[in-house]
Image (cartoon, rainbow, N blue to C red; front, top):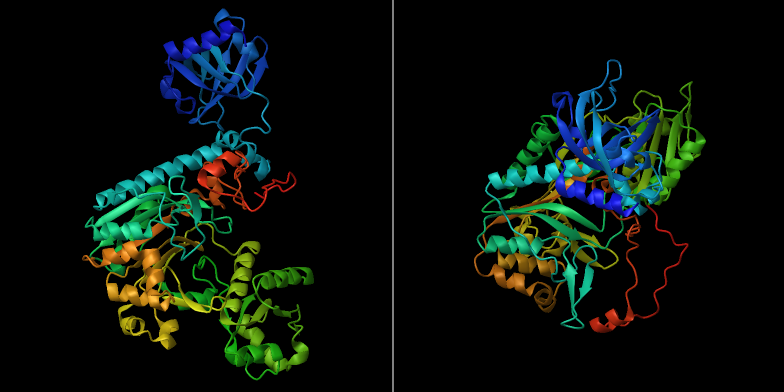
Amino acid sequence: MEKSAREAGQSFVKDLKRTMHCGLLSADHDGREVNLMGWVNSRRDHGGLVFVDMRDREGVVQVVLDPNQASMSSAKDFRGEYVVAVRGTVRKRPAGMANAKMKTGEIEVVAARCEILSEAKTPPFQVNDEDVSEILRLKYRYLDIRGERLTKNLRARHEITRFARNFLSDEGFLEVETPILYKSTPEGARDYLVPSRVNQGAFYALPQSPQTLKQLLMIGGQDRYFQIARCFRDEDLRADRQPEFTQIDLEMSFVDQDDIMAVNERLAQALWKRFKGVDIGEIPRMSYQEAMDRFGCDKPDTRFGLELKDLGTAVAGSGFKVFDDALARKGAVKGIGVETGDFSRAFIDKLTDMAKKAGAKGLVWIKADEAGKLNSPAAKFMSEEKLSRIFLELCPSGKGCGFVVADAFDTVCAALSTLRLFLGAELKLIDASRDAFLWVVDFPLLEFDPEGKRWVARHHPFTSPQDQFLDDLIGGNEAHYGQILAKAYDLVCNGHEIGGGSARIYRSEVQDAMFRALGLSKEEAQHKFGFFIEALGYGTPPHAGIAWGMDRLTMILCGTEAIRDVIAFPKTAKAADLMADAPNAVSRDQLIELGIRLAGPVEKKPDARPEA
């Protein structure tokens, strides 16, 4: 671009200023003079005139330019994604020329002056092109953000955040920021560690959540706290999980489980009313055990059936070793029945592979042909009568295909839940026109880790047991640990956990008992949580809290399938940022300054491209 053109562009921005966004213009602005600034979305030459669709955050408007006029000579150089400025007058389009597909399709802007503010290289893909690989989108995220889809989602995220902030403020909550550099307390996922230059050999941890900090705020008398909190977990990723994420985090004093659930239920109702125009009504509750028995997971999608059926009675005495052995080991035999669909052998093999990947040793299937005759690999191991009884338990109509897994209870649930969700989507059984909510309650307080050969917290070490189990915990009755239920609750929507929390332990003797149950010696507990243990001794109110997954919440409200669609700069499934090429090696001088020496050289293989 020539120097005079650059100077002209700078003068335009300095002297004229933008007066309107492109996408906000309408027939109400007919005759108004406006200054627009944005990107060239597309350009069309029509004889002596140039028609440009000009785009900014609010949308697109058609601009008519005459490059033969001195004040618009730069129009002949307009190209896609150039940043331009236009001064002109809004007018209604000629009769029959309106574009119903555009929000601004009734009008156009007749330019009197235009300038190029910034040129652009040819982009690797066209903005708003839907047929672009996810890897390319992530590499050039700033271009993808220009598109309508992400712009709409980021705006929605802003509005949801603002709405939640105002709702909680009106409910008497104070917004308090807690530290990002904090102490490592590895009782959940792995921490991201940050070395300290000033205190060499010591490390901060990025918070997995502000858990102890928000409890300390309750001890500090702040009564009701919330925060739009950034959190970090070094764990495997999936479509609804990132290494860094955002929580709507809150805590309340002088309350129990039902009190905080009521506040958050009102928040859910208000959110859906505001952003979807839907009254979700009262949210039903379901125990953890019922959710596992019926759906095989603790965050069930209840928009469709295919519930798990317990086949323990039906298969008893079948003579089939797989079933008999599972029952003898006090495991489970469960199944699901699908009474519609065409189940080819190839499709059944695919389901079998899925069940195995979920931990099952195999998958037993029973299929009825058009004449109603049953076919199953298990047919040679049991009587026709027994096979028929099992099939009818799963498919009462006598049609379709039943799938059975026999193993330890958790393995059976994991495998069948995986199949249920896949089949629900594949066979289009899910009612996508509605959102299904559920409070899942009565979680186990503890679960046994067979690898570590110790009890671990189902949620975290600060979750309170239900009152009737206090004696078992304080008394160290390990034989009953597996039966202790927690004052914990998860808010589930469409099979996603969008919020989870608990009433907290607020008495020192109960917290000490919890640490003992987790196998922590006094010395270990003091080392990890000494500051918190000390604080509990200075008068702690009964309190409870919850954290909403802001990314998952926004994903559902925006109707997308992955949280990266509602995050400005997400990472891949391997926790990599393709745009900035992070994580990356740092200089030797930086490591020396931190007192760190690597075990070996860090090499980045050029062919090790992270998956999106």
